[in-house]
Image 1 (spheres, rainbow, N blue to C red):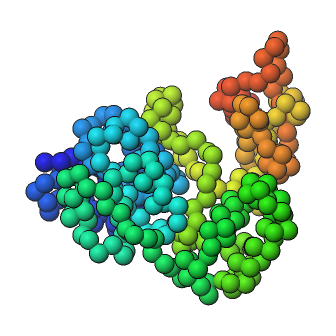
Image 2: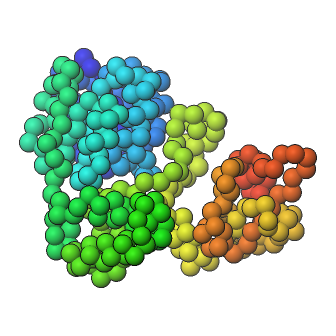
Image 3: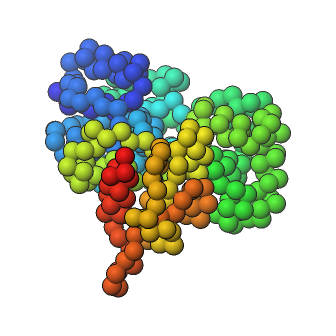
Length: 319
């Protein structure tokens, strides 16, 4: 018998996978979880032979990121990526990181149990191409590679100038590409274009936020199981949404008002940047207030978690 873990946040496919495994005399379900970032923990705790892993799971955690980490530590564990998202980069990355097989939920003709059998026998099974889905007036496969790359950055919330710098092209060329994509698809605004692309899974935003990994679980001393966590694609947009709901947004940065001189009354959202670069300029501009923690000696930056703890204590003290 092979021990199987299912990593899938959607109830219906998760229950179907569980049912198929229960009907088989070759497989035993040992774990069924919703968050790919927690898969590492279960791989350390249990003897797992095969993982069925969705690409996009709870809290926007990436199944491909989790698969890469697991393969690095446990290359003997077989992994099948299961997805309904036709994102063009998935197949390439899955092959690169050593994922054993790849299965599209809605369009793959081979039953999942047969794919599992072949994978456990040592085969690597991949589809020839990504499925084509409707995207406005066109099919997703009608977009060129350059258009897809630009659309990915549009979804991430980048400006034309930021996209141009990343892709080594002129901002005017980026503008023309975005306009061409909108004309092709029939979407009237940049926002509508980005929302629709994300809805049908053509493009999944690439972000640098930390995952809820095994290490995070250990460092948090279990708190990660009880503290609600949300991962977002565009922090400036979230800040605007919080403001609309009545929150005052405070950013932590060295050039702000001393932390103990600030009024924290009302609903508060706190933004803490990275230890190296701090809060980005765009995010800082969106904040209502900037507060600082004065430093003594030669150290010019506190650990981010320490800074967050001090500021959250001060905010709580004023409740």
